[in-house]
Length: 102
Image (cartoon, rainbow, N blue to C red):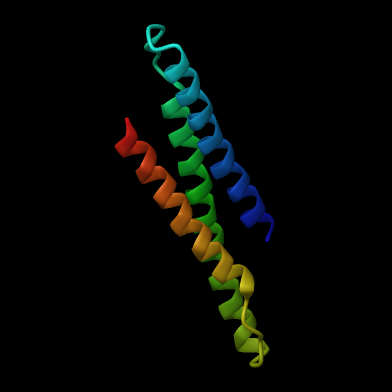
């Protein structure tokens, strides 16, 4: 669950950075500075880190649950895995939305 929280924070922060600077750009259309790492690229990095870390944490969780299931056969279903899957899908959707809005 800690990885879910951290990943959601990274994804949300990245998307917020993108929307904030998009709003600033629309308010001041003549003032566009090209940088090596601009707000859009930074937002994509943050969202990518959030989605990537959540995918890796989910793989680790599934692996550890498999080990526990061998020892404790009646292991209950993990809601955290389902939530992680939904957040991965939403994070990928946000990533794609930002790429196509450029």
